Length: 310
Length: 310
Image 1: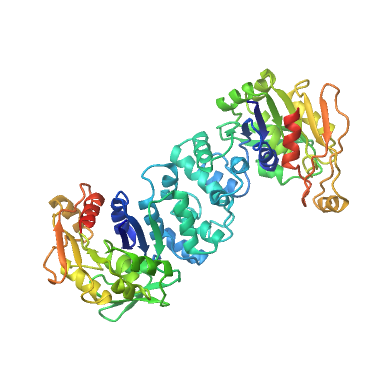
Image 2 (image 1 turned 180 degrees about the vertical axis):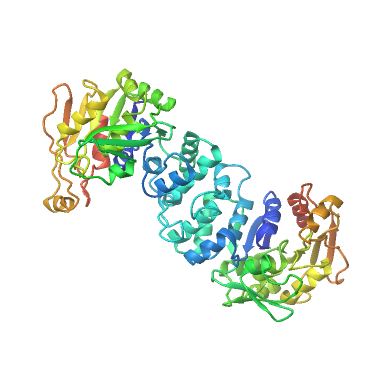
Protein backbone atom coordinates (compact mmCIF):
# COMPACT_ATOMS: atom_id res chain seq x y z
CA UNK A 1 0.00 0.00 0.00
CA UNK A 2 1.22 3.47 -0.89
CA UNK A 3 2.75 5.29 2.08
CA UNK A 4 1.98 9.01 2.16
CA UNK A 5 3.43 11.37 4.75
CA UNK A 6 1.97 14.86 5.18
CA UNK A 7 4.14 17.45 6.92
CA UNK A 8 2.49 20.55 8.31
CA UNK A 9 0.03 21.65 10.95
CA UNK A 10 -2.98 23.90 11.30
CA UNK A 11 -5.86 24.26 8.86
CA UNK A 12 -3.78 23.23 5.84
CA UNK A 13 -3.05 19.78 7.23
CA UNK A 14 -6.66 19.43 8.34
CA UNK A 15 -7.81 20.04 4.77
CA UNK A 16 -5.43 17.72 2.95
CA UNK A 17 -5.83 14.92 5.52
CA UNK A 18 -9.61 15.04 5.24
CA UNK A 19 -9.24 14.36 1.53
CA UNK A 20 -6.48 11.76 1.72
CA UNK A 21 -8.14 9.67 4.43
CA UNK A 22 -10.72 8.47 1.89
CA UNK A 23 -8.03 6.85 -0.26
CA UNK A 24 -6.61 3.42 0.27
CA UNK A 25 -3.17 4.43 1.54
CA UNK A 26 -0.98 4.27 4.62
CA UNK A 27 -1.33 7.83 5.84
CA UNK A 28 0.91 9.59 8.36
CA UNK A 29 0.49 13.18 9.51
CA UNK A 30 3.61 14.82 10.90
CA UNK A 31 2.62 17.78 12.98
CA UNK A 32 4.47 20.89 14.11
CA UNK A 33 4.53 21.24 17.91
CA UNK A 34 5.20 24.95 18.23
CA UNK A 35 1.70 26.40 18.61
CA UNK A 36 1.59 28.89 21.47
CA UNK A 37 -1.72 30.71 21.08
CA UNK A 38 -5.31 30.47 22.35
CA UNK A 39 -6.52 27.53 24.42
CA UNK A 40 -3.38 25.59 23.47
CA UNK A 41 -1.12 28.40 24.62
CA UNK A 42 -2.87 28.70 27.97
CA UNK A 43 -2.59 24.96 28.62
CA UNK A 44 1.01 24.96 27.47
CA UNK A 45 1.87 27.70 29.94
CA UNK A 46 -0.05 26.18 32.82
CA UNK A 47 0.84 22.50 32.42
CA UNK A 48 4.21 22.66 30.70
CA UNK A 49 3.16 20.00 28.19
CA UNK A 50 3.65 20.22 24.44
CA UNK A 51 0.92 22.11 22.54
CA UNK A 52 -2.19 20.16 21.57
CA UNK A 53 -3.84 22.39 18.95
CA UNK A 54 -2.27 21.07 15.74
CA UNK A 55 -2.37 17.48 16.94
CA UNK A 56 -6.06 17.89 17.75
CA UNK A 57 -6.86 19.23 14.29
CA UNK A 58 -5.02 16.37 12.57
CA UNK A 59 -6.74 13.76 14.76
CA UNK A 60 -10.09 15.34 13.89
CA UNK A 61 -9.28 15.35 10.18
CA UNK A 62 -8.53 11.63 10.31
CA UNK A 63 -11.48 10.62 12.51
CA UNK A 64 -14.79 9.40 11.06
CA UNK A 65 -16.92 12.30 9.82
CA UNK A 66 -19.78 11.57 12.17
CA UNK A 67 -20.14 10.61 15.80
CA UNK A 68 -20.46 12.33 19.14
CA UNK A 69 -16.83 11.83 20.18
CA UNK A 70 -15.79 13.93 17.21
CA UNK A 71 -18.21 16.69 18.23
CA UNK A 72 -16.88 16.54 21.78
CA UNK A 73 -13.31 16.74 20.56
CA UNK A 74 -14.22 19.89 18.59
CA UNK A 75 -16.28 21.47 21.36
CA UNK A 76 -15.17 24.83 22.71
CA UNK A 77 -16.43 26.22 26.03
CA UNK A 78 -18.04 29.62 25.63
CA UNK A 79 -18.74 30.12 29.35
CA UNK A 80 -17.23 29.30 32.69
CA UNK A 81 -14.52 30.98 34.71
CA UNK A 82 -11.24 29.63 33.39
CA UNK A 83 -13.02 27.32 30.94
CA UNK A 84 -14.21 29.94 28.48
CA UNK A 85 -12.29 29.55 25.21
CA UNK A 86 -10.87 26.15 26.08
CA UNK A 87 -11.34 23.37 23.60
CA UNK A 88 -12.48 20.06 25.08
CA UNK A 89 -10.18 18.16 22.71
CA UNK A 90 -7.24 20.09 24.12
CA UNK A 91 -8.31 19.28 27.69
CA UNK A 92 -8.74 15.65 26.66
CA UNK A 93 -5.19 15.57 25.24
CA UNK A 94 -3.83 17.37 28.31
CA UNK A 95 -5.40 14.77 30.60
CA UNK A 96 -4.09 11.94 28.39
CA UNK A 97 -0.63 13.47 28.51
CA UNK A 98 -0.82 13.65 32.28
CA UNK A 99 -2.12 10.08 32.61
CA UNK A 100 0.32 8.47 30.15
CA UNK A 101 3.28 10.70 30.95
CA UNK A 102 4.29 11.11 27.29
CA UNK A 103 3.01 13.22 24.39
CA UNK A 104 3.39 10.48 21.78
CA UNK A 105 1.50 8.04 24.01
CA UNK A 106 -1.28 10.58 24.58
CA UNK A 107 -1.64 11.06 20.81
CA UNK A 108 -1.71 7.29 20.26
CA UNK A 109 -4.43 6.80 22.89
CA UNK A 110 -6.50 9.67 21.48
CA UNK A 111 -6.13 8.18 17.99
CA UNK A 112 -7.45 4.86 19.29
CA UNK A 113 -10.40 6.44 21.07
CA UNK A 114 -11.29 8.52 18.01
CA UNK A 115 -10.78 5.53 15.72
CA UNK A 116 -8.74 7.53 13.21
CA UNK A 117 -7.53 6.47 9.79
CA UNK A 118 -3.73 6.56 9.71
CA UNK A 119 -1.33 8.00 12.26
CA UNK A 120 -0.50 11.36 13.77
CA UNK A 121 3.12 11.86 14.83
CA UNK A 122 4.61 14.88 16.57
CA UNK A 123 7.59 16.20 14.64
CA UNK A 124 9.37 16.37 17.98
CA UNK A 125 8.63 15.64 21.60
CA UNK A 126 10.88 18.43 22.82
CA UNK A 127 9.15 21.50 24.19
CA UNK A 128 10.48 24.37 22.07
CA UNK A 129 9.46 27.80 20.86
CA UNK A 130 9.41 29.16 17.34
CA UNK A 131 11.31 32.38 16.77
CA UNK A 132 11.67 34.73 13.81
CA UNK A 133 14.32 37.24 12.84
CA UNK A 134 12.78 40.08 10.84
CA UNK A 135 14.50 41.99 8.04
CA UNK A 136 15.41 44.76 10.52
CA UNK A 137 17.00 42.09 12.78
CA UNK A 138 14.19 42.34 15.34
CA UNK A 139 13.61 38.98 17.03
CA UNK A 140 10.08 37.72 17.71
CA UNK A 141 9.64 34.61 19.88
CA UNK A 142 6.46 32.53 20.14
CA UNK A 143 4.45 31.06 17.29
CA UNK A 144 1.36 33.12 18.08
CA UNK A 145 3.39 36.35 17.99
CA UNK A 146 4.52 35.53 14.48
CA UNK A 147 1.19 34.05 13.32
CA UNK A 148 -0.92 37.01 14.49
CA UNK A 149 1.79 39.53 13.85
CA UNK A 150 2.61 41.44 17.02
CA UNK A 151 5.32 43.12 14.99
CA UNK A 152 5.26 45.47 12.02
CA UNK A 153 3.60 43.25 9.38
CA UNK A 154 5.34 45.14 6.61
CA UNK A 155 8.68 43.75 7.76
CA UNK A 156 9.67 40.51 6.06
CA UNK A 157 10.66 37.42 8.00
CA UNK A 158 14.34 36.83 7.29
CA UNK A 159 14.93 33.64 9.22
CA UNK A 160 13.10 31.24 11.51
CA UNK A 161 14.63 29.29 14.38
CA UNK A 162 13.60 26.97 17.22
CA UNK A 163 14.75 27.39 20.80
CA UNK A 164 15.90 25.12 22.33
CA UNK A 165 16.87 23.27 19.17
CA UNK A 166 14.92 19.98 19.22
CA UNK A 167 15.64 16.56 17.75
CA UNK A 168 12.96 14.83 15.70
CA UNK A 169 10.83 12.07 17.22
CA UNK A 170 12.32 8.79 16.02
CA UNK A 171 9.04 7.39 14.64
CA UNK A 172 8.71 10.56 12.58
CA UNK A 173 12.09 10.02 10.97
CA UNK A 174 11.18 6.39 10.25
CA UNK A 175 7.94 7.46 8.60
CA UNK A 176 9.74 9.97 6.37
CA UNK A 177 12.35 7.39 5.35
CA UNK A 178 9.70 4.77 4.54
CA UNK A 179 7.38 7.10 2.60
CA UNK A 180 6.47 6.80 -1.09
CA UNK A 181 5.28 10.42 -1.16
CA UNK A 182 6.16 13.26 1.21
CA UNK A 183 3.68 16.11 1.02
CA UNK A 184 4.82 19.41 2.50
CA UNK A 185 1.96 21.84 3.13
CA UNK A 186 -0.45 23.37 2.51
CA UNK A 187 -0.52 25.76 5.46
CA UNK A 188 1.01 28.92 6.85
CA UNK A 189 4.54 28.83 5.48
CA UNK A 190 6.37 30.31 8.47
CA UNK A 191 4.19 29.13 11.34
CA UNK A 192 2.95 25.68 10.26
CA UNK A 193 5.17 24.31 7.48
CA UNK A 194 8.78 25.45 7.92
CA UNK A 195 8.85 24.89 11.74
CA UNK A 196 8.85 21.15 10.98
CA UNK A 197 11.96 21.53 8.82
CA UNK A 198 13.87 23.24 11.62
CA UNK A 199 13.69 20.17 13.80
CA UNK A 200 17.01 18.29 13.91
CA UNK A 201 17.00 15.28 11.58
CA UNK A 202 13.93 16.13 9.49
CA UNK A 203 15.58 17.69 6.43
CA UNK A 204 18.34 15.02 6.18
CA UNK A 205 15.62 12.34 6.39
CA UNK A 206 13.56 13.99 3.64
CA UNK A 207 16.67 14.18 1.46
CA UNK A 208 17.56 10.56 2.15
CA UNK A 209 14.02 9.26 1.57
CA UNK A 210 13.27 7.78 -1.85
CA UNK A 211 9.78 9.32 -1.70
CA UNK A 212 8.46 11.78 -4.27
CA UNK A 213 8.68 15.15 -2.56
CA UNK A 214 5.74 17.42 -3.15
CA UNK A 215 5.05 20.96 -2.02
CA UNK A 216 1.41 22.07 -1.97
CA UNK A 217 1.34 25.83 -2.29
CA UNK A 218 -1.25 27.98 -0.52
CA UNK A 219 -4.13 29.59 -2.40
CA UNK A 220 -3.87 32.92 -0.62
CA UNK A 221 -1.03 34.95 0.89
CA UNK A 222 -0.99 35.84 4.56
CA UNK A 223 -0.36 39.40 5.65
CA UNK A 224 2.73 39.71 7.85
CA UNK A 225 4.05 36.34 6.66
CA UNK A 226 3.86 35.95 2.91
CA UNK A 227 2.67 39.36 1.71
CA UNK A 228 3.05 39.67 -2.05
CA UNK A 229 4.29 36.09 -2.49
CA UNK A 230 3.81 34.25 -5.78
CA UNK A 231 4.10 30.44 -5.99
CA UNK A 232 7.81 30.79 -6.85
CA UNK A 233 8.37 32.86 -3.68
CA UNK A 234 6.81 30.12 -1.54
CA UNK A 235 9.10 27.57 -3.17
CA UNK A 236 12.20 29.76 -2.85
CA UNK A 237 11.52 30.41 0.82
CA UNK A 238 10.90 26.71 1.50
CA UNK A 239 14.13 25.79 -0.31
CA UNK A 240 16.13 28.01 2.05
CA UNK A 241 15.40 25.41 4.72
CA UNK A 242 14.90 22.28 2.63
CA UNK A 243 17.73 22.84 0.19
CA UNK A 244 17.70 23.07 -3.61
CA UNK A 245 16.96 20.03 -5.78
CA UNK A 246 14.90 18.30 -3.13
CA UNK A 247 11.35 19.01 -4.28
CA UNK A 248 10.06 16.97 -7.21
CA UNK A 249 6.60 18.49 -7.54
CA UNK A 250 4.81 21.71 -6.90
CA UNK A 251 1.04 21.38 -6.62
CA UNK A 252 -0.62 24.71 -7.14
CA UNK A 253 -4.17 25.96 -7.53
CA UNK A 254 -4.76 27.96 -10.72
CA UNK A 255 -8.44 28.79 -10.29
CA UNK A 256 -8.83 32.38 -9.12
CA UNK A 257 -11.51 32.81 -6.42
CA UNK A 258 -14.51 35.02 -7.24
CA UNK A 259 -14.11 38.81 -7.17
CA UNK A 260 -16.44 39.00 -4.15
CA UNK A 261 -14.39 36.45 -2.23
CA UNK A 262 -11.13 38.20 -3.09
CA UNK A 263 -12.61 41.45 -1.82
CA UNK A 264 -13.45 39.71 1.47
CA UNK A 265 -9.85 38.59 1.79
CA UNK A 266 -8.67 42.12 1.01
CA UNK A 267 -9.88 43.07 4.51
CA UNK A 268 -7.13 40.86 5.92
CA UNK A 269 -4.74 42.00 3.16
CA UNK A 270 -4.58 38.44 1.84
CA UNK A 271 -4.18 38.02 -1.90
CA UNK A 272 -4.44 35.31 -4.50
CA UNK A 273 -1.15 33.45 -5.01
CA UNK A 274 -0.18 33.70 -8.68
CA UNK A 275 0.85 30.27 -10.00
CA UNK A 276 3.95 31.61 -11.74
CA UNK A 277 6.89 29.70 -13.17
CA UNK A 278 9.30 27.78 -10.97
CA UNK A 279 12.58 26.04 -11.67
CA UNK A 280 12.34 23.44 -14.43
CA UNK A 281 13.69 20.82 -12.00
CA UNK A 282 10.38 20.94 -10.17
CA UNK A 283 7.35 19.57 -12.00
CA UNK A 284 4.54 22.07 -11.49
CA UNK A 285 1.02 20.65 -11.41
CA UNK A 286 -1.30 23.61 -11.79
CA UNK A 287 -4.98 22.79 -11.57
CA UNK A 288 -8.30 23.88 -10.09
CA UNK A 289 -8.08 22.99 -6.39
CA UNK A 290 -10.55 25.58 -5.14
CA UNK A 291 -13.34 24.58 -2.79
CA UNK A 292 -16.90 25.69 -3.51
CA UNK A 293 -17.32 27.41 -0.20
CA UNK A 294 -17.13 30.89 1.23
CA UNK A 295 -13.40 30.57 1.84
CA UNK A 296 -10.53 30.51 -0.62
CA UNK A 297 -9.37 27.08 0.56
CA UNK A 298 -8.30 23.83 -1.03
CA UNK A 299 -11.05 21.36 -1.73
CA UNK A 300 -9.97 18.23 0.19
CA UNK A 301 -11.13 15.79 -2.51
CA UNK A 302 -9.67 17.71 -5.46
CA UNK A 303 -6.35 18.07 -3.64
CA UNK A 304 -6.26 14.41 -2.60
CA UNK A 305 -7.02 13.21 -6.12
CA UNK A 306 -4.22 15.39 -7.49
CA UNK A 307 -1.78 13.99 -4.92
CA UNK A 308 -2.83 10.42 -5.66
CA UNK A 309 -2.12 10.90 -9.39
CA UNK A 310 1.47 12.10 -8.93
CA UNK B 1 -34.50 -10.91 32.71
CA UNK B 2 -34.75 -9.53 36.24
CA UNK B 3 -35.17 -5.76 36.31
CA UNK B 4 -33.32 -4.06 39.17
CA UNK B 5 -33.58 -0.35 39.86
CA UNK B 6 -31.09 1.32 42.22
CA UNK B 7 -32.11 4.67 43.71
CA UNK B 8 -29.39 6.86 45.18
CA UNK B 9 -26.34 8.87 44.19
CA UNK B 10 -22.76 9.39 45.34
CA UNK B 11 -20.37 6.72 46.54
CA UNK B 12 -23.10 4.36 47.72
CA UNK B 13 -24.58 3.99 44.26
CA UNK B 14 -21.11 3.64 42.77
CA UNK B 15 -20.40 0.69 45.09
CA UNK B 16 -23.63 -1.24 44.60
CA UNK B 17 -23.68 -0.67 40.82
CA UNK B 18 -20.12 -1.95 40.47
CA UNK B 19 -21.28 -5.20 42.04
CA UNK B 20 -24.62 -5.55 40.28
CA UNK B 21 -23.24 -4.87 36.79
CA UNK B 22 -21.58 -8.29 36.82
CA UNK B 23 -24.94 -10.05 37.14
CA UNK B 24 -27.21 -10.94 34.27
CA UNK B 25 -29.94 -8.39 34.96
CA UNK B 26 -31.56 -5.31 33.46
CA UNK B 27 -29.98 -2.65 35.61
CA UNK B 28 -31.16 0.95 35.99
CA UNK B 29 -29.52 3.56 38.19
CA UNK B 30 -31.75 6.43 39.26
CA UNK B 31 -29.61 9.33 40.33
CA UNK B 32 -30.25 12.35 42.52
CA UNK B 33 -29.60 15.64 40.71
CA UNK B 34 -29.08 17.96 43.64
CA UNK B 35 -25.29 17.95 44.04
CA UNK B 36 -23.98 21.49 44.44
CA UNK B 37 -20.38 21.12 45.60
CA UNK B 38 -16.89 20.96 44.11
CA UNK B 39 -16.29 20.82 40.36
CA UNK B 40 -19.96 19.99 39.83
CA UNK B 41 -21.09 23.01 41.83
CA UNK B 42 -18.80 25.37 39.93
CA UNK B 43 -20.06 24.09 36.59
CA UNK B 44 -23.65 24.22 37.81
CA UNK B 45 -23.25 27.87 38.78
CA UNK B 46 -21.43 28.87 35.63
CA UNK B 47 -23.41 26.95 33.01
CA UNK B 48 -26.83 26.66 34.63
CA UNK B 49 -27.00 22.96 33.70
CA UNK B 50 -28.00 20.18 36.08
CA UNK B 51 -25.20 18.76 38.24
CA UNK B 52 -22.99 16.07 36.68
CA UNK B 53 -21.20 14.57 39.69
CA UNK B 54 -23.57 11.76 40.68
CA UNK B 55 -24.34 10.91 37.07
CA UNK B 56 -20.63 10.69 36.37
CA UNK B 57 -20.02 8.29 39.25
CA UNK B 58 -22.87 6.02 38.18
CA UNK B 59 -21.68 5.99 34.57
CA UNK B 60 -18.21 5.09 35.80
CA UNK B 61 -19.55 2.31 38.00
CA UNK B 62 -21.34 0.76 35.03
CA UNK B 63 -18.53 1.18 32.50
CA UNK B 64 -16.00 -1.58 31.78
CA UNK B 65 -13.33 -1.77 34.50
CA UNK B 66 -10.47 -1.07 32.12
CA UNK B 67 -9.83 1.28 29.25
CA UNK B 68 -8.50 4.76 28.73
CA UNK B 69 -11.89 6.44 28.35
CA UNK B 70 -12.73 5.39 31.88
CA UNK B 71 -9.47 6.87 33.16
CA UNK B 72 -10.18 10.08 31.28
CA UNK B 73 -13.69 10.26 32.69
CA UNK B 74 -12.22 9.97 36.19
CA UNK B 75 -9.36 12.38 35.60
CA UNK B 76 -9.19 15.51 37.76
CA UNK B 77 -7.05 18.50 36.83
CA UNK B 78 -4.63 19.44 39.57
CA UNK B 79 -3.22 22.47 37.79
CA UNK B 80 -4.35 25.22 35.48
CA UNK B 81 -6.07 28.53 36.16
CA UNK B 82 -9.78 27.76 36.35
CA UNK B 83 -9.16 24.09 35.52
CA UNK B 84 -7.67 23.04 38.85
CA UNK B 85 -10.11 20.75 40.66
CA UNK B 86 -12.31 20.18 37.64
CA UNK B 87 -13.08 16.63 36.70
CA UNK B 88 -12.75 15.83 32.98
CA UNK B 89 -15.88 13.63 33.15
CA UNK B 90 -17.84 16.62 34.39
CA UNK B 91 -16.49 18.78 31.56
CA UNK B 92 -17.32 16.00 29.11
CA UNK B 93 -20.93 15.86 30.42
CA UNK B 94 -21.18 19.66 30.39
CA UNK B 95 -20.11 19.74 26.74
CA UNK B 96 -22.54 16.93 25.87
CA UNK B 97 -25.34 18.82 27.62
CA UNK B 98 -24.49 21.91 25.61
CA UNK B 99 -24.28 20.00 22.32
CA UNK B 100 -27.45 17.93 22.77
CA UNK B 101 -29.46 20.57 24.62
CA UNK B 102 -30.85 18.12 27.19
CA UNK B 103 -29.50 16.43 30.32
CA UNK B 104 -31.09 13.06 29.59
CA UNK B 105 -29.68 13.08 26.07
CA UNK B 106 -26.21 13.99 27.36
CA UNK B 107 -26.31 11.06 29.80
CA UNK B 108 -27.45 8.71 27.04
CA UNK B 109 -24.64 9.79 24.73
CA UNK B 110 -22.06 9.47 27.51
CA UNK B 111 -23.40 6.01 28.31
CA UNK B 112 -22.95 4.99 24.66
CA UNK B 113 -19.40 6.35 24.48
CA UNK B 114 -18.45 4.65 27.75
CA UNK B 115 -20.17 1.44 26.67
CA UNK B 116 -21.91 1.00 30.04
CA UNK B 117 -23.92 -1.94 31.27
CA UNK B 118 -27.48 -0.83 32.03
CA UNK B 119 -28.91 2.66 32.14
CA UNK B 120 -28.45 5.82 34.18
CA UNK B 121 -31.54 8.00 34.58
CA UNK B 122 -31.76 11.37 36.29
CA UNK B 123 -34.48 11.35 38.93
CA UNK B 124 -35.59 14.67 37.49
CA UNK B 125 -34.52 17.03 34.74
CA UNK B 126 -35.64 20.08 36.70
CA UNK B 127 -32.88 22.22 38.14
CA UNK B 128 -33.63 22.34 41.87
CA UNK B 129 -31.83 22.76 45.17
CA UNK B 130 -31.93 20.58 48.25
CA UNK B 131 -32.86 22.29 51.49
CA UNK B 132 -32.97 21.15 55.12
CA UNK B 133 -34.89 22.42 58.12
CA UNK B 134 -32.91 21.74 61.29
CA UNK B 135 -34.40 20.96 64.69
CA UNK B 136 -34.06 24.62 65.69
CA UNK B 137 -36.00 25.58 62.52
CA UNK B 138 -32.87 26.95 60.85
CA UNK B 139 -33.06 26.49 57.06
CA UNK B 140 -29.97 25.37 55.08
CA UNK B 141 -30.14 25.45 51.28
CA UNK B 142 -27.72 23.68 48.91
CA UNK B 143 -26.71 20.03 48.99
CA UNK B 144 -23.06 20.79 49.73
CA UNK B 145 -24.02 22.94 52.74
CA UNK B 146 -25.88 19.98 54.23
CA UNK B 147 -23.35 17.33 53.13
CA UNK B 148 -20.32 19.14 54.52
CA UNK B 149 -22.21 20.69 57.38
CA UNK B 150 -21.96 24.46 57.29
CA UNK B 151 -24.33 24.45 60.22
CA UNK B 152 -24.06 23.21 63.81
CA UNK B 153 -23.56 19.46 63.21
CA UNK B 154 -25.08 18.67 66.57
CA UNK B 155 -28.46 19.88 65.34
CA UNK B 156 -30.60 17.16 63.81
CA UNK B 157 -32.13 17.47 60.36
CA UNK B 158 -35.89 17.71 60.88
CA UNK B 159 -37.10 17.83 57.32
CA UNK B 160 -35.73 17.95 53.79
CA UNK B 161 -37.29 19.76 50.84
CA UNK B 162 -36.55 20.62 47.21
CA UNK B 163 -36.95 24.07 45.73
CA UNK B 164 -38.47 24.52 43.21
CA UNK B 165 -40.44 21.29 43.64
CA UNK B 166 -39.55 19.13 40.62
CA UNK B 167 -41.48 16.44 38.79
CA UNK B 168 -39.78 13.12 38.08
CA UNK B 169 -38.35 12.33 34.65
CA UNK B 170 -40.93 10.15 32.90
CA UNK B 171 -38.48 7.36 32.00
CA UNK B 172 -37.54 7.16 35.67
CA UNK B 173 -41.16 6.59 36.69
CA UNK B 174 -41.50 3.93 33.99
CA UNK B 175 -38.37 2.15 35.26
CA UNK B 176 -39.69 2.13 38.85
CA UNK B 177 -43.08 0.79 37.76
CA UNK B 178 -41.50 -1.97 35.63
CA UNK B 179 -38.92 -3.08 38.23
CA UNK B 180 -38.74 -6.48 39.92
CA UNK B 181 -36.56 -5.07 42.70
CA UNK B 182 -36.15 -1.48 43.82
CA UNK B 183 -33.00 -0.91 45.85
CA UNK B 184 -32.86 2.27 47.88
CA UNK B 185 -29.35 3.15 49.03
CA UNK B 186 -26.73 2.70 50.24
CA UNK B 187 -25.48 6.28 50.51
CA UNK B 188 -25.77 9.46 52.55
CA UNK B 189 -29.32 9.33 53.81
CA UNK B 190 -30.14 13.03 53.65
CA UNK B 191 -27.97 14.13 50.73
CA UNK B 192 -27.99 11.17 48.34
CA UNK B 193 -30.93 8.89 49.13
CA UNK B 194 -33.93 10.87 50.41
CA UNK B 195 -33.57 13.72 47.83
CA UNK B 196 -34.80 11.23 45.20
CA UNK B 197 -37.96 10.58 47.22
CA UNK B 198 -38.80 14.28 47.36
CA UNK B 199 -39.20 14.47 43.60
CA UNK B 200 -42.86 14.58 42.57
CA UNK B 201 -44.12 11.18 41.40
CA UNK B 202 -41.30 9.01 42.77
CA UNK B 203 -42.90 7.78 46.03
CA UNK B 204 -46.32 7.06 44.44
CA UNK B 205 -44.53 5.09 41.70
CA UNK B 206 -42.53 3.07 44.26
CA UNK B 207 -45.76 2.31 46.13
CA UNK B 208 -47.56 1.32 42.94
CA UNK B 209 -44.71 -0.85 41.65
CA UNK B 210 -44.99 -4.62 42.25
CA UNK B 211 -41.22 -4.76 42.84
CA UNK B 212 -39.65 -6.00 46.06
CA UNK B 213 -38.59 -2.84 47.89
CA UNK B 214 -35.22 -3.05 49.58
CA UNK B 215 -33.34 -0.56 51.71
CA UNK B 216 -29.58 -1.03 51.99
CA UNK B 217 -28.44 0.58 55.21
CA UNK B 218 -25.08 2.32 55.55
CA UNK B 219 -22.19 0.75 57.45
CA UNK B 220 -21.17 3.95 59.20
CA UNK B 221 -23.01 7.02 60.44
CA UNK B 222 -22.20 10.47 59.13
CA UNK B 223 -21.55 13.33 61.51
CA UNK B 224 -24.03 16.18 61.04
CA UNK B 225 -26.46 13.93 59.17
CA UNK B 226 -26.99 10.62 60.93
CA UNK B 227 -25.04 11.00 64.18
CA UNK B 228 -25.92 8.21 66.60
CA UNK B 229 -28.20 6.42 64.12
CA UNK B 230 -28.82 2.68 64.40
CA UNK B 231 -30.27 0.69 61.47
CA UNK B 232 -33.78 1.28 62.83
CA UNK B 233 -33.20 5.05 62.81
CA UNK B 234 -32.19 4.95 59.16
CA UNK B 235 -35.36 3.02 58.37
CA UNK B 236 -37.58 5.29 60.46
CA UNK B 237 -36.18 8.40 58.83
CA UNK B 238 -36.59 6.92 55.36
CA UNK B 239 -40.18 5.94 56.12
CA UNK B 240 -41.02 9.57 56.95
CA UNK B 241 -40.68 10.21 53.21
CA UNK B 242 -41.47 6.80 51.77
CA UNK B 243 -44.39 5.91 54.06
CA UNK B 244 -44.86 2.93 56.36
CA UNK B 245 -45.44 -0.57 55.01
CA UNK B 246 -43.59 0.12 51.77
CA UNK B 247 -40.22 -1.51 52.42
CA UNK B 248 -40.09 -5.31 52.19
CA UNK B 249 -36.42 -5.83 53.03
CA UNK B 250 -33.66 -4.23 55.02
CA UNK B 251 -30.18 -5.26 53.97
CA UNK B 252 -27.71 -4.50 56.70
CA UNK B 253 -24.06 -5.24 57.40
CA UNK B 254 -23.41 -7.02 60.70
CA UNK B 255 -19.62 -7.33 60.52
CA UNK B 256 -18.00 -4.71 62.71
CA UNK B 257 -14.93 -3.09 61.12
CA UNK B 258 -11.59 -3.52 62.89
CA UNK B 259 -10.84 -1.44 65.95
CA UNK B 260 -8.10 0.41 64.06
CA UNK B 261 -10.48 1.30 61.25
CA UNK B 262 -13.17 2.46 63.69
CA UNK B 263 -10.59 4.67 65.36
CA UNK B 264 -9.80 6.23 61.98
CA UNK B 265 -13.46 6.99 61.48
CA UNK B 266 -13.68 8.48 64.96
CA UNK B 267 -11.68 11.42 63.57
CA UNK B 268 -14.71 12.26 61.44
CA UNK B 269 -17.06 11.34 64.30
CA UNK B 270 -18.48 8.52 62.19
CA UNK B 271 -19.57 5.37 64.00
CA UNK B 272 -20.53 1.82 63.21
CA UNK B 273 -24.25 1.45 62.51
CA UNK B 274 -25.69 -1.13 64.93
CA UNK B 275 -27.88 -3.63 63.05
CA UNK B 276 -30.67 -3.44 65.62
CA UNK B 277 -34.24 -4.70 65.35
CA UNK B 278 -36.71 -3.16 62.94
CA UNK B 279 -40.47 -3.62 62.44
CA UNK B 280 -41.45 -7.24 61.84
CA UNK B 281 -43.11 -6.21 58.60
CA UNK B 282 -39.65 -5.63 57.12
CA UNK B 283 -37.53 -8.69 56.54
CA UNK B 284 -34.06 -7.86 57.83
CA UNK B 285 -31.13 -9.53 56.06
CA UNK B 286 -28.11 -9.05 58.30
CA UNK B 287 -24.86 -10.37 56.94
CA UNK B 288 -21.19 -9.60 56.45
CA UNK B 289 -21.08 -6.98 53.69
CA UNK B 290 -17.77 -5.38 54.68
CA UNK B 291 -15.07 -4.81 52.11
CA UNK B 292 -11.50 -5.89 52.83
CA UNK B 293 -10.08 -2.46 52.29
CA UNK B 294 -9.00 0.50 54.33
CA UNK B 295 -12.49 1.95 54.35
CA UNK B 296 -15.61 0.77 56.15
CA UNK B 297 -17.52 0.35 52.90
CA UNK B 298 -19.75 -2.26 51.32
CA UNK B 299 -18.01 -4.88 49.28
CA UNK B 300 -19.64 -4.56 45.83
CA UNK B 301 -19.70 -8.32 45.16
CA UNK B 302 -21.00 -9.32 48.61
CA UNK B 303 -23.71 -6.69 48.43
CA UNK B 304 -24.73 -7.64 44.88
CA UNK B 305 -24.93 -11.35 45.76
CA UNK B 306 -27.14 -10.53 48.75
CA UNK B 307 -29.44 -8.42 46.57
CA UNK B 308 -29.64 -11.15 43.90
CA UNK B 309 -30.75 -13.71 46.48
CA UNK B 310 -33.73 -11.68 47.80
